Image (cartoon, rainbow, N blue to C red; front, side):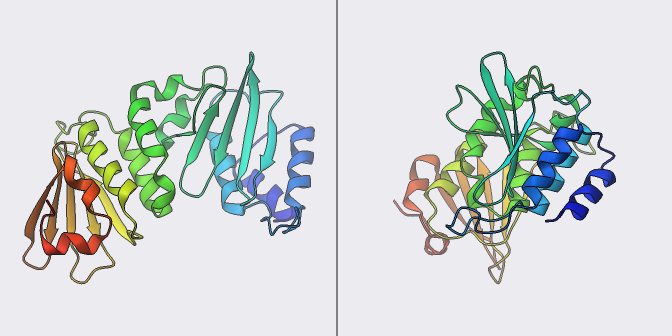
Length: 255
């Protein structure tokens, strides 16, 4: 990045920042690659755009003590003090993560909650979804960024989210099945299409396979539909750990 691009992005988002914040961001934008002598990346443009989107969407004034940083991969983060607790938000490719003193790891934030986010109470906006968000946040890096974002945003869908008005929220037991599947998988799952059913279950279409197989994650485990006839392999939640490669589903259930 450079100063001109940074100022353009800030202007595009109609952001009003203090002189000290702009000065700090310009300093970061001008740090070259390999700034640590170990091939560290410069500040990432996409990450900075996510930051600006967040700051422009949140309704509250930006904290006076806000700090700006970026990590080895170039992802930018902000932090501020809340009493004796440090609050940090990191804008990674797969998700925007909230960190707070006392957390074991970051919690991914759905875009929906930006509108109600409060710097003085960061957790309030995710309270209803927190258990599910904690469940998935540790495996998002294993997915394509578009799939990770879709999963996090689907978690924040409330009852009646579809055209019929009676669609259920994401089922936490079905989500457990999905997380178990991704956790034990040694394969790169490749390109996926992810969506949620009316019952709140998760479905995947495996786009890198020809023909394209489908998986439905339920409270009991998963249903693997093998194309083109969509022959069914049903796997219980207890047996998901036996499947570390996609191709194993093509040979039937492993006991």
